[in-house]
Length: 302
Image (tube, rainbow, N blue to C red):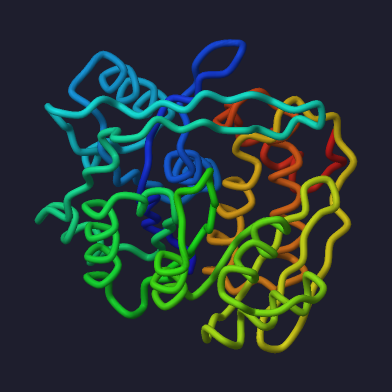
């Protein structure tokens, strides 16, 4: 693929309330922003309240260059928020408000039209915590053409997941991305036994007929497992500001370069570079110009 791909981040949009103030978040929005930065057309499919936080969220997304035409407005439920604390290693901990607007996603005619054109759809478990949104996510994925690449970014949060959500999502996915802790949680929930990250990732791959399993390991890099090979990366040593959005940058890189048939070695290096750089910045959607982007992918990560 040489032209920009149409890439949809499907699910939650919310405000991360950090000790330093609020920043726009939600993995689908972070992911869509990063795909835009890489040169694709990233679109957010979500739902916000018809309130000041929702209006501000739209202004911020538009300021980031994101198309908000597929962000639904809700007159009854508030825009989502999550209280975030950062641990000494820079890792975020989230307390996510329930009954937010994105718990009431609807697969409208506009969403059906969008899903029918999508080259990539990235979805997670969190947006499926409510029955209404779980149905909307399922309908969106069902309506997409067979050629659409479906990425399940597992993204376990609090207690907002179960066996049923995981199994349904794995059935719909081509690529699964999760961190090492999530890999072991998923393995326990799905009775996959014990083993190394590689063993469990390969078991997940084979049991669910996946094309690729990507396991991120924070400062220790990542492991990518396909049917034919395993590629490990030791990561880059950087000074972490916070790790919010680093995983979403990793997933965006996977999507962008997988579509363009790059090798697993290339995918591994490029995704680790991008994620490491994002971890050196505050928040999940730092501004990046073309010159910086080239430096990230070709130079030393600081």
